[in-house]
Image (cartoon, rainbow, N blue to C red; front, side, top):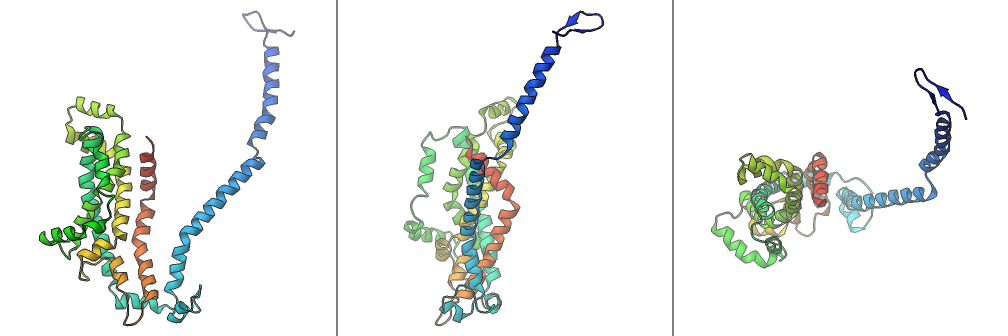
Length: 310
């Protein structure tokens, strides 16, 4: 056995230890190199994953591509059920914006959606704080609120029409936004519940020790923590309002307040439906939603991820 002598000390037996360590490292290197090399199973999993992603993207893009092709079809191509247009009929886009107030419909839809988001959040945020943090209403109150959205809106058309007419909100973007926001408040409350419950209760206790009341705690402590959830819920509510057809059809009569879904449904000639112009207007209506989703994608994904973790 080899010995090693140090100044001011006796012999130390570290040569065998170094040999053992070196040998063990040499044995581990091939194993780590082999583990990092992708095997047949990992390649198959990766191939399946990419196949699923490509199929999902194709299914999502297929309606948009079909609508894009429809917007450039002539009436003869539409009647012949051709998949691709024989020529690019740009006149569909020109006539859609010249013959119909598409920009006014877009403005009304965006305005209605923003008003509805504001109304839904103003009501749902304090309601969620009271339910999730202050334990107001008991354990069944959330289910009772969500049950208000289960019934189809068509069952409340007549009383809703009478209430809106009595309040003087008929044929108004503001009135339509308020009604849509009130109708979607149960959805906003249900979506925000998981975000409020994910916050530890120790944060509320610490705020109370610092002298914060319930309103100060909600505004200064809770709202910054649930900001991603608020953005995610706002986007969902906006899209639901933006795509709604029944309520705007009921509560609007003039071009100044009609939204894009109602305006597209009115694109009919004397004897034919303007499918090409309708497709062009529909594609134009996708632009605000896609821009919003693109710029707020980080907040949307972060909010949905945060709300899914208990």
